[in-house]
Image: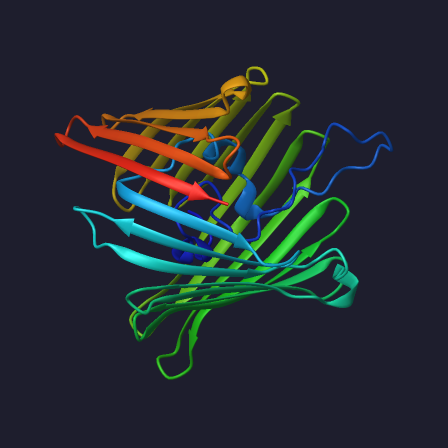
Length: 318
């Protein structure tokens, strides 16, 4: 149901590595013009950020800011369920002195102990046009290489993605996105995925709609491949809740999930919990260890149907 980029995304609250743009302030405009609807990748972002990120084993993350535009991080993950790994992450972002008009690129690279590489690049061609490239390898094999161009108008966003083009095998995946702000709270659009190979050829059309108010957002994607609906609601400054429904025509499965986030500023704590229709219950607690520049992360997930328990402990420094 999602775009091709989801194949190369890392699990977490941010599925898109350059989704650092602030949410569109649709209710702060006073000039009467419709706002830009944002990217297609971010339609369900508000709801997904409420759910906890699954953690298992022991993980340590050390972040180091070398300059205003250069950052590195080291991740060590020890697990008894999945293979343990070490991951090196580097970011070269646009500094305050390098504006979009100067065509300053943003680069993100990541390599783990198995030799797998995940690289992203973002380049502002003009004020409204952005180009993205993604390369991903699994050890010595290329698994993903894609190129995307996005144009953001005053009240619409259009994007085209070319993924895994192979002239010798005569295969390619094309993805087209379009979003249009119909009113201050309503966004309509769609996604068209076309894939071609030697053995098969076809396309999937998915329609999308989002209606938002100051305290809640409702989003729906529906097409031949299935449906994805989400609802996000901010109860107050401390509590946020989200509900997701996903149905796939290929696997003939449906999943309903409920998540919530509770912030305790006085205790420097954030708790995220979830439960879904597959009898999976989980929660993650993040505690800021002031005055140290470190965050303690503790999580547990229980699969009652599969009789499995996963417990994780992590430390994020920097």
